[in-house]
Image (cartoon, rainbow, N blue to C red; front, side):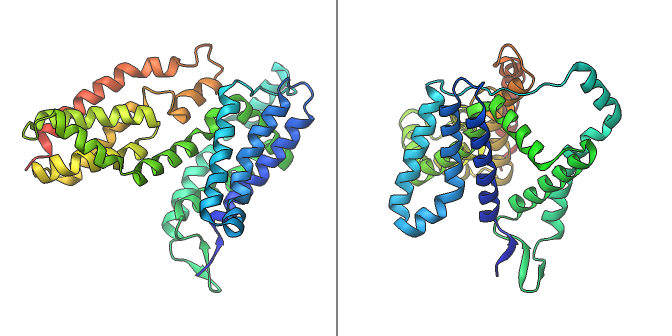
Length: 328
C-alpha cells in the first residue's frame, strides 16, 4: 500500500528548496565565490531530485557511479575552500530587540514542535490508512513524521513572525552558508558507513584483533571494543556507522560468543562509548562544528576542546561498566 507522504517526496522537496537556494546564490553579486558555492548546492540538490530518475533510466551500477562522481566533486569544492558566505540585509539592534520583546518566549515554540509532532506522528499514525493510503510512509515512518514536524514548525514560525515562505527559504540559505560543507557531512558519512558494511570491514577488524590480542583476555577485549568504538566514531563522525563494524568484528565473536557476554547491555554500553568519540571529532559536524558556526565562535574547535575531558571520563566509566556488568 502506498502512502500520502513518502520518503521520496520528502527528498524531492529538499531538492527543490536547494535549487531555490542555488538561484538566490547566483543572484548574490556580493558573494565573491557565488559560482562555485552555487555549484556545490546544485550538485547536492541533484542527488535528491534525480537519483530515482538515474536509476530508472541507466540502471543502478551506472547511476551509483554518477552519484559517486557528484560526491567527489562536492568534496573537491569544499576541500579547496571554494565556498563563501553570501551577503544579507541585517536588521538594526533596535529592530531585533523590538521583535524579541514582541514575540517573547513564544520564539521557542517552532523548535519544541518538531520533536513533539515527530513523536506523536510516529506513535499515533503507525499503520493508519485512509482510502487505501497510509498517511505516512511506513518504511520510513520516523523521517516522514519528522517532515510533518518541520512543516508544523514552519507554519508556527510564519504565524509568530509574520514572515513569508520566501523569507523562510532566504533564512535557510543564510544558515546553510554559515554552516557550509558541514551540513552535508551526515549524509556522506551514512553513505560511507554503508560502504564499510558492504566491504565486510567487520571481518577484517576481527582478523586484526586476533593477531595482536589474546582471546582469553576479557579486559583487553573490552578496552579494545570500547576504545575502538570511540576512535572509529571519531573517523566516521557517527556512532551508528561505527557500531556494525566494531560489533561484528569484536563484540560478537570475542565477547558474546567467546566470553558469553549478555548482548543487550553490551551493545548498549558499546554504542555509548561511540558517542564519547562523537564529542571529540569535527566529523560530528551537527554536534561540534555547526554550533560553533551558528554562535560565531572565533575558535571553531572550541566546542570539541571543552568536551574532551567529559568524553574521556565517560569512556573510562563505560569500560568499567562493561567489564563488570555484561558477563554472566
